Amino acid sequence: MFRTLLASLAATTLLTSAQAEPDWYPSQFGADDRLGAVNHLTEAKTADAARLITTGKTYALGMVTGRDTPAYGPREYDVMILQLADGSGTPLGTNKAVGNDDYVDTFIGIGSQIDGLGHMGIDHLYYNGVHVSDFVTTSGLTQFGTQDLPPIATRGLLLDMTQAFGTPVPDGTAFNKAEIDAALTRLNLTIEPGDVVLFHTGKMASGSTDLAVSPGEPGLGVEGAHYLASLGVVAVGADTWAVEAIPFEDPVRPFEVHQTLLAKHGVYILENMVTDALAADGVSEFFFTLGAPRLEGTVQAIINPVAIR
Image (cartoon, rainbow, N blue to C red; front, side):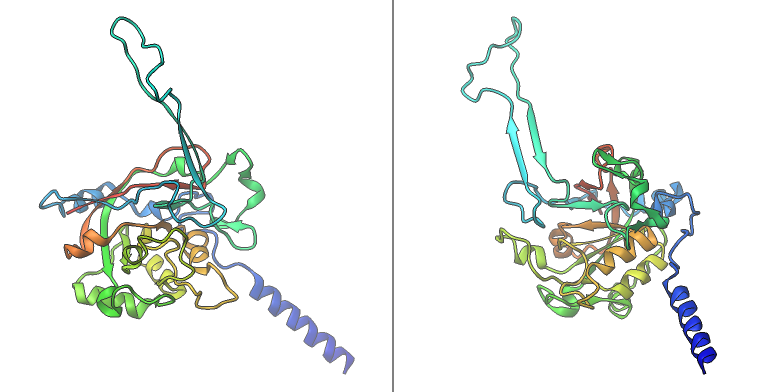
């Protein structure tokens, strides 16, 4: 009996150990890859996406970032103009040249932003199983810094979830495979490798006067995150601050959509996208372009992507 018990414990230990083994790395792009899903981008993809431009109308997808922009604490923003405001400074030369300069003191993760692959991980492991000790320093990331992101110029899709759930979509509503497929069917569209997918929920417009981050929001579910990644999307965004559904689908597994997209699949997250004008115009397919600021070593970047129809 004792030997049987030992054998049972050993089997249980082996099973537990096997279950604990990570199955999300190495990446499909190789163990040394540090760029993730942007590997799906190609020159041909960009050229095809450019053919979607028929009117030339542009849509700024970034919100204004300022002192009153709701932010996930303790993030805050401040700016200082480095010039005497009363005009008493001495002009330069006979042409009396004058000007202003500025100093911005801010957390990067405020307003419209892209989450890089060094933003969130699983038990101190990040995309491709890289341990935090291998790339995080107080003076910046030595891997996964957003300065390495290539220009993203590709096909964008807007899935207007208010058509199924109302405006705004109720907090905690999760978009998984069934909801995503239903939205695509309504549009007669399919997702292709290299696409950027945005969700319109009406949440940003409904909370436009709020001075604090909303405690809840609709958004992507864990199954939906795996599904979009399996289709080869480069990035997923929404008109919400976290992109994923809050309250979380499983209350003891916070920010699992972030972990799924960033760590497991290398898919970038676009938060606080301004989608109201696109939705109002009924735009569902467009040319998407983003050149992230090349600030060395940053985890995230404040962005203003542009949609062109």
